[in-house]
Image 1 (cartoon, rainbow, N blue to C red):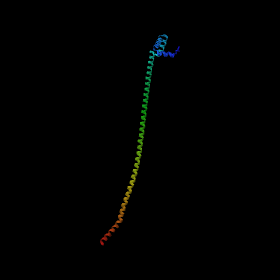
Image 2 (cartoon, helix red, strand yellow):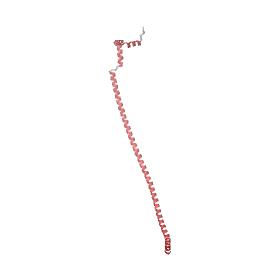
Image 3 (cartoon, one colour):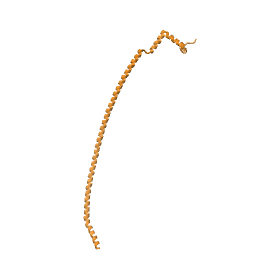
Length: 174
């Protein structure tokens, strides 16, 4: 007789659908086996109580998630407000620093412009003094030239008149 192994029995049930159904009917009609199958199935099947517990846990999780989300949003809102306020303060400080720097630059420009104007005025005054000196020298030169011309005429006029007289005498006598 051939040896019947568990594997061989499973193979036979796989091939014979009718025998498989009969075996299932036999197992279901047997009270102890049926109870064992039902208990095994019940362990895998969720009860209304399990579903209610799951529903309550889910509601609690959703509620907690909503509260955490609200907290996160509120924290983000606070952080954003703080960032905006810090940015506002920094911007005001930057504007104030820029105002101060611009004011200092304008003041420095005003000072250097005044200094430059002062130097120009000094140079103009120096030029005025030099021009006045030149005018005085020119006046003296004009006076000296006038005197020179007068002296030239005073000394040379009698000589010139003498020469003209001699030329006339030669022209008329000759």
